[in-house]
Every structure is written in C-alpha cells, then in structure tokens.
Image (cartoon, rainbow, N blue to C red; front, side):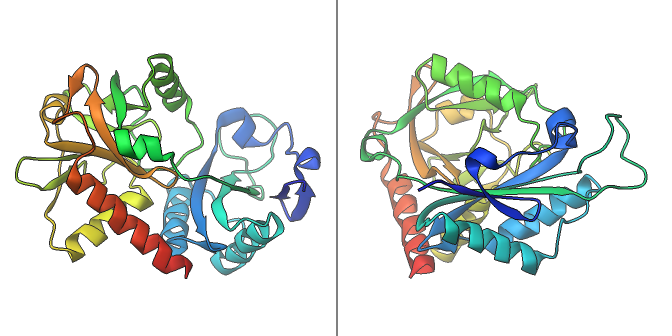
Length: 286
C-alpha cells in the first residue's frame, strides 16, 4: 500500500506529494514541526504536542495553518489512511511560499502544512537489555532550542558523529561544561540519592513531551525530580542515566564517552521508569 501524505489541503500518494521550490521551509528552514506517537491509532499526549506547536509558531510569528480542532482531524485522517496502529505522525508548518527574501513576506502568505504517518517497531529488546552508549559533543546550536524548528543541521552533525563512533546518541555540552540534551532526545541522570535530574525547560533545550510526561509520572509515584543543569562530569559519575523521546521512550544509557556507568548494565530504576511509561502508553491506547 502506498503511503499517503497531506500537503496543503490534499491527501496524496507519497510519490506525488511535493512542495513549492520557494517554500520558506525549503529555502530558510523557516518553520516548525512535531512528531507524535501513535498507539491503537490514537495520538499520545496530542494536546501537549498541539500546545507546543502553537507556542513554537507564535515565537516565530507564523500563523496556525488552521484551527487546532481542524488540524486534529487532518492528523487522525492521515493516520487512518496509512493504517497506522503503532507508529508516528509527523507534521511540519512553514511560513509559506514567497519570493526569496530574508524578511517575512509582506503581506503575509498562507502557512504551508505537510503531514505524514508511518508505522514503527519498538526499540530492540537488545538495546533495552544491554543499554546504549552516548558520546559528548560541543553544543553549537542557536539560543532558541525551546522552539521546535526544522533547522536541524547541528543536530544532524552530532547524530552523525555518534553513528560514526558506534554510539546511539550524542549528548551536547555547553561552553560551561553542562549537558543540554541529545541530538534528538532529552538527557537524564539518576544521582546517588535516587533523584531524577534533567535540564530545566529553558531556551537551551526542547521541552520534550516524553520528558514532560515522565516527570508527571515520576512525581505521581513519589520519585524526586530535580530540574537543573548537570555537568558532563556529574553525568559520568551518576548511578544511572537514560534518555527520552517520542520514538525512544525511556532508553537506558550505560556508557558516556569512555566512562562506564555503574556495572555497565541498565539500572533498575531506569527500567522501572520505562515500565511506568509503557504502562501509561498502553492505558492511553486502550
């Protein structure tokens, strides 16, 4: 079955789905995106994703392409047409099509909207059983990482560095030596007191939806959460570490650069957090 994409008001086979050569998303990376997990055909934490989308658009002074209610219809219909029960739905909004010029088009043009959906497979059991390694890389991104912008070249470079070195992810480190986040994930450590530590939702990181949900779930279980900066040195001496994202969920980290965490196996608390999040997703899908 050919995959179906939504492009500016039309549902099209992927092979026929195109955008204009002067779309500002193509020429300037002038746009934002969201990736939403799909379980049982439903959108996991869709309201939070929509809230973040609207904030990102507002920060870039881009209008919503349609009402939130109408966009939900498009998202669900794209999921349905692609017969996705377990997977992701991707949406991207650019400022629209205009003659190439750096300032915003005046008068404003209509924002462009693209939506795709695809099935995914769970993170391999071997990865969860054995854990993953991450490398550290200098954080060279702009200072508004709280906006989920489509300008991802620095992320591409650190993800490629990780792949080239046989690692799963790269944790970016700011000029003061503090970990910000991964190339496509949020970074966490568990200290010796059992508290979860993750960078606060400021302009240095994207406030991940899985991150946000896990904080709520952890607090509901009486687990202490510290939203603060932590150094690369602190991470390397942590009791446990893990990362979160829409596609990786909660994935244990057992090595940072050349430093092995604990006994080199996924920590029990991390695995419990993964089960906690998996139970939440199963409940949402039922």
